[in-house]
Amino acid sequence: MNIKANDPNLKSWVSIPENSDFPIQNLPFGIFSNGNSPRVGVAIGEEILDLKVLFELGFLENTAFEITDFDAAVLNPMLLKGKQATRNLRNRLSDLLNKENIELQNNSEAIAQVLVKAKDVKMHLPLYIGDYTDFYSSEQHAYNVGCLFRDPNNALLPNWKHIPVGYHGRSSSIVVSGEDFHRPKGQKRPNPEEPPVFGTSNLLDFELEMGFVTYQGKPLGDSISTEEADDYIFGMCLFNDWSARDIQGWEYVPLGPFLGKNFASHMGAWIVTLDALEPFRVAGPVQEPKVLPYLEYKGDKHLSIDLEVAIKPEGTTEKVVSNSNYKYMYWNMNQQLAHHSINGCNINCGDMMASGTISGPEEHEYGSMLEISWKGSKSVTMNDGTERKFIKDNDTVIMRGFAKNDKVRIGFGELAAKVLPAK
Ligand code: CA
Image 1 (spheres, rainbow, N blue to C red):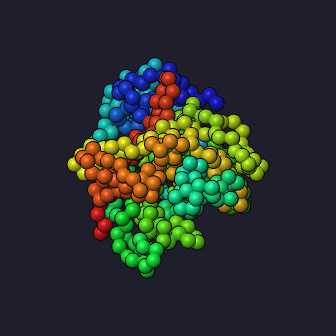
Image 2 (tube, protein in one colour):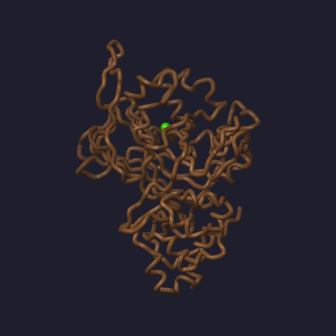
Image 3 (tube, rainbow, N blue to C red):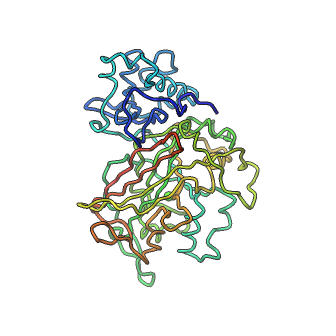
């Protein structure tokens, strides 16, 4: 696929620091405010391009959009215009930021209005998320959990290699990077010989995930094939599916995750378009046993995205506790979306689909403290000498991700969230 804005040779007249997450080849979308109303912005280097003002100044004429698509507190109105429209928009923004193009570059009055320093703005939850689905699609993670709670010979349940297993999560408690949250309380049974007790969760955990965001799907009753799936995926973000393991462990039988998950999930503020990620496609694992025909797919549909998790206790520096990669997924997004809709379930604009914890084969690639501490049997030493098996009060968990080749580095920004003591 030849997407103009992906040309690795493009250079911007906006200065881009080395190793920036946001070169001209990225152009991720988010919602920001700068003492004014929230609006659509695009990250470029250390600045944000204000699409509302850009539109008002006439730079986005001949696009499919209206002012209400950018003068909006969420990206949904923009996404309702569909894949071709947002692809054309990104190409147009790429032109405007291109060193070879003088249109905006030579208009200092306009530049002063449309470019805002990223450090000065507040980022907002970028979507109205009607539905949130969480998959369970990393084989190493499913295997590790199976080993921890069953046994290594029976780690994967019989359905796992036939179905991209998932569940419907809680969309109302998805919040954006930077929003602190309180440690959850709930019912748990720390001693299996004793009755359950109520109290604060002692086993609070992160789950390193990536989310993908959809365009408007098809009506109820229709399905999206693996072949069609790319046309329904807008982009991806970092995602932390917080989990209270003690609450989860007691409540999940037989219907699965509930209060152990729905107290908060964090998403990154920037949504990187699937278009921008196209150069980083890689082949997925051989799927054996063979999947059913509706889950078969053609071409490389996995993506290589380096991922990192760090814990920063209060008053000290951060410690990296995991380095994983999105390529470790067994099931890709096309298969997840095809499976999600094969029964006729409708997919809506702004739905959030999370990958499930992304763990790689090596121990330093595990994507949750449950796995890193092997269910609390070992600990990680922080830079201040304190130990972690799970997440403590006032810890900030930071996730980062980027895709890179020899020419371009496409990043996701930082997803950071601090755990406050229970209320
Ligand atoms: Ca999860």
